[in-house]
Image (cartoon, rainbow, N blue to C red):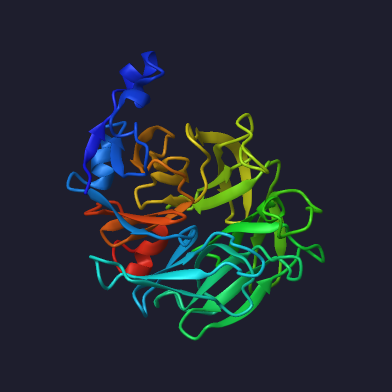
Length: 363
């Protein structure tokens, strides 16, 4: 169990060793705390929020995605790369038992190296139902094309949606969101498969794409990144957030971006007016999600950081180690840090992407 810890920003401003002396952050083993950098942090999480570690495994089971499937009331989390002989599993965490959160691992057909993912309504599907499918960023390997793959987790059937840009294969698709109005899939393409030695050297720039599943149209909507990674829409769909994790390549490169950029969305199809939204003070911003109030949440080097829509850091779900992603659930947030799964309970905030699926606070 954990509690809130207030951060004195004026003290931080004049003392670079502030966090080294703070008991909540001066730790030798991963532990969870709720660090309030701003009074609004209490309103976002809720004054009664508590946090704890749920699972601690000997392998990197909790890495990316975190997609809710209503039929079995479970979160589907992609595991981190193990080896070419043991490709990335999907770890399924049941939400039926809020004390222990039982889990099991599975592998989906034709999914070589899964990374980010999201719920998916195929063309023609009614939005009045819960999402019938999931779509995963499949980074591929030396034998399989990188792709966007649609999966029915209830039947373990899959269908490739996009395997190339007009004949040129992608490098390592990283994160994907479906536009709730047009149904288009927007995704980032980095080259972490190359850095992890299961993909060939990239042959095209690292970019952000928009794909129309109903027509096959695919466009580049943003470029100029070192490593485009997390992607998210604002709740009003007027802004897109993209993280650049260029500070992590073959190793740490601290002078490269650990930055979230904001773009204006034009006609639901184009991005303009790129500007810096936030920079992560620790590690790099990986998975991105917005809550229904427009606050931007990102997994970073010491946990999950939360900024308001103006880019002001409100607080952190601090776990003392790199968090790659997280997922909202009714009244709670799950934090992924590879071998460990954490949960913050009694949370006020609702996740924009998943709230419709859970049937609370639907947009």
